[in-house]
Length: 104
Image 1 (cartoon, helix red, strand yellow):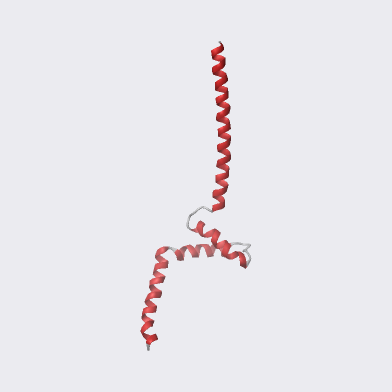
Image 2: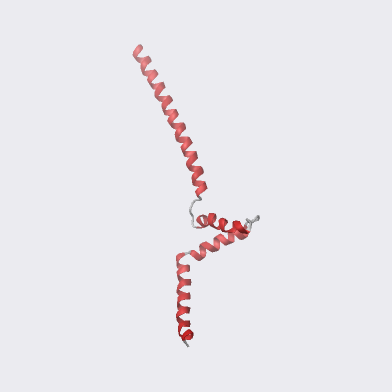
């Protein structure tokens, strides 16, 4: 008799939880990731399926992959160093020009 009384409450809890998952966008996000996994021609081994989901969950959320950010960061650091060198060269050239102007 006790299980009969809990059954409507359990049903409400399940429905509330489903609504929560729907409102939060979790169902849509997981569906997108799983569809991506399904559509990959060379699926990762079973041990790699969870890693695939981890890597692609951010993509489904519109976030940038960490490895992409690392590559971009490295490229920007290199560009920054090149620009610093160029500025130093220009300052040296400017200093030589100013020195030549004084000698005239």
